Length: 95
Image (tube, rainbow, N blue to C red; front, side, top):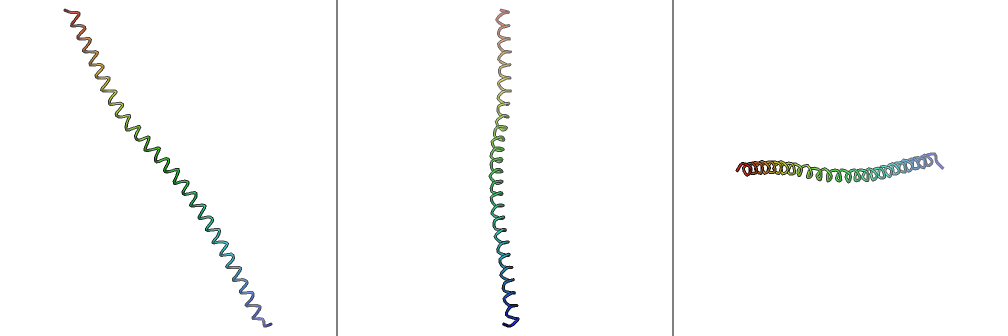
């Protein structure tokens, strides 16, 4: 057999080995990419949950300003009532 024949077989074998290595590298890249997608989806879920909790906290804080305002109005109203009663009681005592 001619020398060139063996050279062609060796080159074909080398090319096949190179292609097999390339396929293995591409499969590893695919697996790594799939793992990264799962990780990012997990992070996305956690961020969505944090966002939802932040929105709930914001609503609570918004309500506190209303609660404080109502409390101030009630306190002022109660104080005015007590002052009014005191004045009325004083008026009754004087007469």
